[in-house]
Image (cartoon, rainbow, N blue to C red; front, top):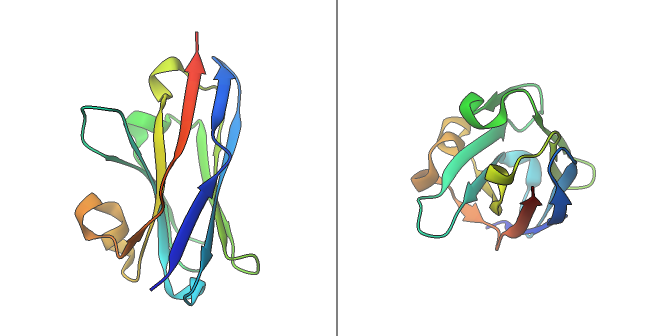
Length: 125
């Protein structure tokens, strides 16, 4: 089972950018499709973006990303990234990465094989 550790969160002003990283270990990284999710206290965790094992297929929750976020992966480094531009206060949340061997499972919060512990993003107005 792969283990995931997120990093890169922090405090940023509205309009700024962050790049989140998720490092994988303990498994065969290329066997997994990867996803980013976010959760605000008191609300359900929601899907943000997904990428397949080869990095050539991506999918975004357009209502959230609005073309501002980009998911990518570096299989040589066992890492998946989420580049976030033009951040808004409503993007403030704990961001989690998740892994699943089935690409379509990455699109569903309840179907992931592994989760990271999350990294907090706070966007100030």
